[in-house]
Structures are given as structure tokens and as C-alpha cells.
Amino acid sequence: MNRVYNFSAGPSMLPLEVLERAQKEFVCYGDSGMSVMEMSHRSKVYDAIIKKAEADLKQIMNVPDNYKILFLQGGASTQFAMVPMNLLKDNKDCDYVNTGQWSKKAIAEAKKYGNVNVVASSEDKVFSYVPKLTPDMFNKNAAYCHVTLNNTIYGTHIPNDKVPNFFENVPVVADMSSNILAEEYDINKFGIIYAGAQKNLGPAGLTVAIVREDLVNNPMDITPTMLRYDTHVKADSLYNTPPTYAIYFAGLVFEWILEKGGIKEMQKINERKSKMLYDFLDNSKLFKGTVVKEDRSLMNIPFILPTEELNAKFIKEATENGFVNLKGHRTVGGMRASIYNAMPVEGVEKLIDFMANFEKNN
Image (cartoon, rainbow, N blue to C red; front, side, top):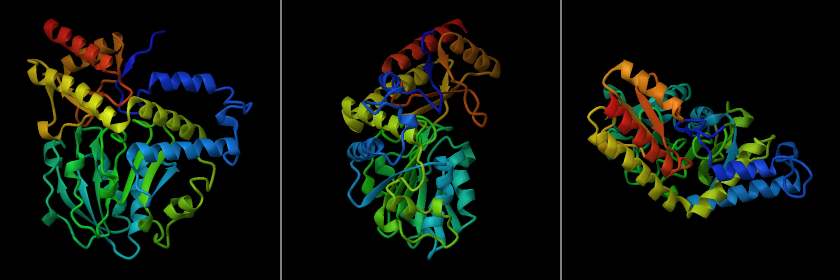
């Protein structure tokens, strides 16, 4: 069976070259005589795998030396609790920007541990834009401020030049789950970055956190051992058995990105792919994008047709033609094309050709 073009928001398409290499190494990794799935996380062979993955990610993202890279479990959703538990011991005030479903969940979790100030929200227009953020909106004495950099469901994002790092003493915490490694960010603008793996990093099961060292050692007294950043920093992400195969696989993705020229080159490709699809939507008489132009995501592109019947017909015919997982989230409806790093330019070109034919026939 031929591979389809998978436009899923996550778990998502993975680079074919990486899948093929993982397939080749699956039964026996190197001369270890076993699969990575079978080996001890304490072994020398695995230690080399995890250390290389960490070093490659540090290189790709240009992570400064005063930050720790952690390979964790529990998804970005666990970070919704882990962040306030580790940062609100001495100061209960925190700022959140509400730009979508995941922001709302992060806010709800943080309210269990501190005083959450929602500085701005785009819920009034179904999260189709990112609110303009200015210093006067934020508490200059907050323990931290939280932003979701890319909104998978609604197709908006906050680029590097709009990150609200307004006060030196207030660290910015960012959920980067759906655009990590897809566009450049200055890591120095952030106190903590976290991301679930299942969009751009690798298979589900792994969560990456990049934490500035000064934010590690002062968790709330109620914080469980496994939810303390210092637990994992001290143990080099090996306090308990980590998701060993997911980390190995992410390491292969990091190597693939380095071979492609790093984030700078990935961003150029992603800008090209997204521009092609947005240009088609802007010039279509049938399809319509749902996000204001200045806030459009490079990764997730929602669009609609004039009727629910046409939406359903498009999704059915697209699936039959090898373009799968295009159905939009239930809160937005319509369609959504997630075009993460692994989606080739050819996949977007073929989708646009299919959409043009659909428009001509309908």
C-alpha cells in the first residue's frame, strides 16, 4: 500500500527517511545485539543515545549553557501543572494569555495553585487572532507569564518578535508543542519552554522541557517528586525509566533536521509551504481561511467551505485520494491542514491541486 499524505494535527506525519532508518535499526541497534526498545536506560549504549539527542537539540535550538534540556513524560498537559507547582512557591501571581483550547486548559490547571491573571483573550472571535500584547497588560511582579506559541486547533501563532518578554524578572513560559523546531526563537527570551513530541519531534510519549537553571530548585512543598524539575535535572532525565524508544526516535529527527540545515532552513521550507496554501485560500472563490492574516500559523491551516455538506464531501473525497486527517477540530469545523516539518512541499502542492479540482467541480 502506498503511503498517504497525513495532515493530522498529531500524532502526525514523520520524516520518511527517519522511519526507514528506525526500521533498519529496529531489531538490532548497532552491534548491541538488541533493539533500543529492549535495552536498559542505564546501559552505556543507551547513555550515548540520550546524550547525543540532548546535544543535537541544544545545537539546533541554540540553547544557552544556563538552561537544562529534559526528556519527560506526561505530555504538555502535565506541564500545565508542573509549571505552577515549580514556580509559585513564594509568589502566587501569574499571567496567562488565552489564545485557544490548550491555553484554557493551562489556565484552569494553574488556578489550582495560584492567582491567575488572564491578561488578554481572543475567545470573543473563536480564537481566530492573537491579542495585541503590551507591557501595561502584564504584572511586572508576577512569578511568570505563560503563552501558547502555536495554536494547533485554531491556526494562530506568536512569532519570535512578538514574545511578551517585557520584564527581566518575569520569566516567559511557553507551550511550543506544535511549532518547536519549525521556526526560530531566541531561547534567552524564555524561562521555560515545553513541547509534546507528537507534532514535530517524534512519536507520542515524550515531552521535552527546556528550563533555565535559576527556575529549577524552588518547587511548592506539595509538588510530587516526579513533577519537580530538579528531580529530573539531577538525574539527567533518568530518574525513572524514560520513554527510551521515543527519545531515540526524536534523536533521529534531530539528526534529520541538522542534515537539512537546521531550524533556519526548516523555517524557509515551512514559510514556502504555508504561503502556497494561504495564497490558494486567499484567491479561492469557494474555500476560505479562518485566521486573520497577521497571526497565521506556519504549521496548522484551518479552512472552510460554504456549507457543512460541502465540508463533508471534501473530506470524504480527499481521504479517497490519499489526503487524510483533514477534518477540522469540532470547535472550528471545516478542515485543517497540519503541515509540520515532515510534510514535504510535494504534499502541499498535491493538496492544492486537489482543492483546485474540487472547486472547479463544485
